[in-house]
Length: 329
Image (tube, rainbow, N blue to C red; front, top):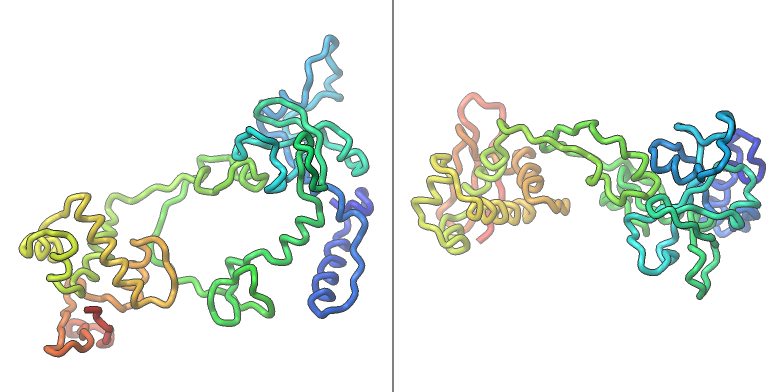
């Protein structure tokens, strides 16, 4: 919404803000619009009965249909400043809305309704000691956050994922696929995440695992074959015959042993990967699928008598090249 002229549907104000970003980075003077001090208001859609009930107060005389709040009508929503929440509230369940109004001069004076409790609050964009008004983000706050926001799709000049402190021309971040996940569309709460009603996408996304997909055998076992059996025995406390049976696929490990072996395999994989991969199975998958851990059926793992690197040889007729990887002590 263009606060300079709400009726103006052009995007000229966005271009102006980009000019400010560039000029500031070059050390030149740039003029900021006056409306940056206004609360950052989003236009949302009334998609739930709860939202409609909060915005449709009970009246003795029923309003004409044309004047009622109806499903899919627009409403206003604000974004709470991290330091602006009132005391004794659940931050994950606190969201303010108001009837749609294009007049920005009314936003700081109108009452805002908390959608879960139905309580009304006043808002402010200024830091103050009074805890009664809820401090919300101004357009200036949003603009300042955008100047240093991380860009997960881009890489910094050193090739690492772009962080808040990186500047300059960014490259596309290479993506290497490892595992396939099936994600359902059962949830209709994506808008709630964007409106900050729900903090994480994981709370509204449904993932399904294919029971036929054996990630342990596919990604963990090949790495276990590169780790000395004595190291596996020392960390797990299990016998040599049991661990060799697990490594050769003749026996399934218990849940406790499985977690121990996954953790060991992930540490080994991370020691050979440049990227910092937090999920253990993903680290193993990245190691194996990049050809650094090919020791599955048909591949022979040969260690030199010295403490040198491990040779991984592909079976005859394979197009895979022999590869050398460093084996930890």
